[in-house]
Image (tube, rainbow, N blue to C red):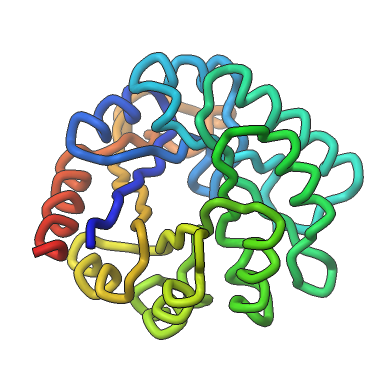
Length: 240
């Protein structure tokens, strides 16, 4: 079975580098250091122009600090989804939980409508729910196209049993494994039957550039083409 490779990127250069190195598609976001936040509309347009909007899935997450959102935040995500699609995104990546730790299905339904024909991906918020398989059934019913999950573990390689069950019961929903994945983990993860794997393939640049008290930590994230190529090779090996 062929497993798709998705790389999380934060800029057009990263988008080009990941696709050139053999990735199938991208998740576009900002602030990966806090799990990712909604990118700007200019960034969405630039990435879509760089590699084609059908390959770009935009993370729509208004803040860090968990996935329980107020009515105002849910409306903001709804507006950002619609804007992301208008500016070229082929898919959007979302997730919301209730205070009890279950999927916020009302929010997801609103976001499904806002996404229109774009792919709707529910992210690793599912890994914080008490019954991942039950949530899978609910998200399948509501029209989610893809789920990003580590199988409830800190790292996907430690969630193989749950990933196997999710892949078996997913129906038409694509199951994408993500969470601390390294190239060497990919064959075992692919063997669970998941449809795709997701990783960030990050390196660092700019550590020597001038910074200061208002500039944050020296350096910034970049996409490492060698890490992407290693993941591509691992996916190919797993398919043999």
